[in-house]
Image 1: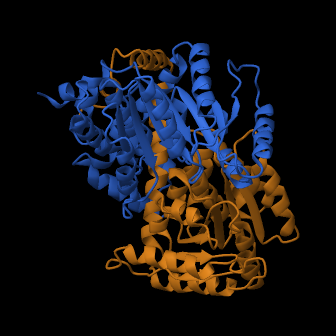
Image 2 (image 1 turned 90 degrees about the horizontal axis):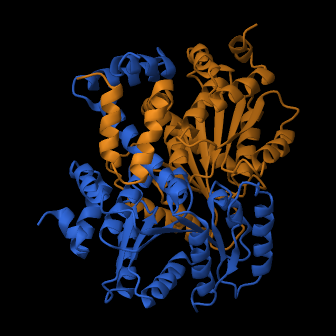
Length: 312
Length: 312
């Protein structure tokens, strides 16, 4: 049986192998996604974003348990910005796999944010296609929420949840970096700590600055204690309400298509201009010429584009 | 007098205007950078990276004062990941301008991290060209150090300084995200706080994990109290030693050329495929087809590339 067919049966080994392929963007990856794409499109994609230590994983685990209680299958993608040389992602993955190890309805996977060319959103969206095609009804994406790659991920989910904790002015500050604008639901976790109400007020007042006239949905600010499960049902409820407000997440789906297509195009285009056997020398020469100041990068780009693009 | 000529005289108004142009990437920006490029290449580019609240700005100000004492001119670019709608960047800029307001040898500028297509590194490097051509001998770039755009910035500086504070395990953790690998100098700031030595040991032990065989330089871990100036001369000394080890930063300059060229090419290429008058409709149609599942993004990319690239 082909790998794509095995993925469609929901076989965890096949899912793991398929995600590794899309993550590495080996030559098989385009073909594999092509095979699976027509079988995807049914999963609800939920993003959970927040700084390290706010309790994202605990919240994700709680949400997962709630969905599992209702018989809904869940795929979890943990985007881990750990550098390759520490191996943190893999360790965390193993620990978390154990929590749902006995449950065939849950698939957990960490994705490392390697690679230069902003491939994170592409790899993540391809992994969503794999899990979606494999029959997962919910795909949870957990991210730290910093940097363009992660913001791109968060922009493409159906439901974007931003998690913070009381008393971290800095965290709320850091969240401003693009993620505030795309949040559908705010969660203040660890409300046993001091200052929960102040943090909620801070978020509310940031929300008040947004132009709400064009908004179909005003993001609620919810309190949770993920460790005890307190407040988690309200988060699920908010996700449900959002689903009923939005018409099948069409805009998000188009956004996802945009991010995917841009990344794939960019990567292939750069491969052509940087790699193409005969061109490789001229690419390196061009870099040398820029580095020693004999040509500026804009004129260099003009020359390269003239070489590779059709006349128009 | 043309704007480029005015920049070459070091006129602060002209510098401000030129950076605004490269930041917005208006149509003038390519021409302007082209004019200035041949006059740049002399400045030493120093990056100062760290989480919010570690005291980057204070350290940058101290370093600036030291350089100014020796008569060296300094340009400061503060990369601020504040979202456009809060206006934090501009406020911070104004406050900091005041500290060196009387000193013509210092130019301070905040850059906002707007834009989707990873334009941060390009805009920053273009701003470096402006400051460099304007005669600034040192260009200090201050960044929060998260996300690919910022890592790209940090990779292209001549000297990368990573700042942390005692007792923030999370911060050291967050720094793993790519920035650890490129640091030339580590600074543990606010050493009046508890745990400074433990933080230093943590960084040292992370460094011990690196493959040092190919390294020309072992990054020192230095203690500072930027508020009092304690330890700052040792940082300057380390920068000096690094300069003498590296042959004119050639590798970094080539890296800078690479980042620049990739970003400019990517942006122009996407403009061609997404925007070009007659193509615009087919681009939107393609997004719709991906969004509703009738074509996968890889095949869509193939079709588009066939349309725009020359046969090879």
